[in-house]
Length: 134
Image 1 (cartoon, rainbow, N blue to C red):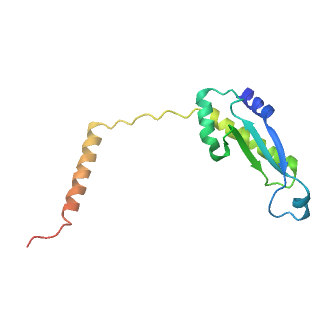
Image 2: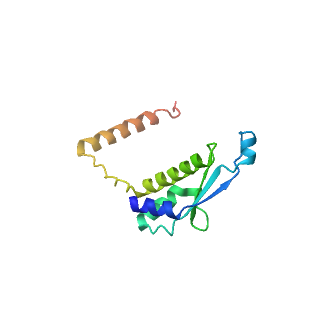
Image 3: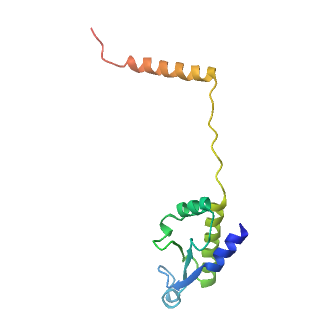
């Protein structure tokens, strides 16, 4: 896991853009928002992890195969850079965790009979709601 995260950090390209929103003169003068780009093909991930990562990335994955993370919630470049790298690490970490297989539940004979009896009672109750023949 650590090797993949290190490779992702090394391959990440950062560009700084001016952020929108409140901030007074600072937001107009300083490019504090960070746009972090990582090519997922260059990460050389195992196929299962690759597919989970593409699903997790969603709309952040562009046509070129890059995950683009925008971080603009802080006032400084360094804080936004840290935020973007943490979000990338969290996304890759989540993709590395293999989901648990769902075990089929098995209902025993008594449970099956109870369920069918309940369905029968519900059907009879609904049958009584029809129009009356006089």
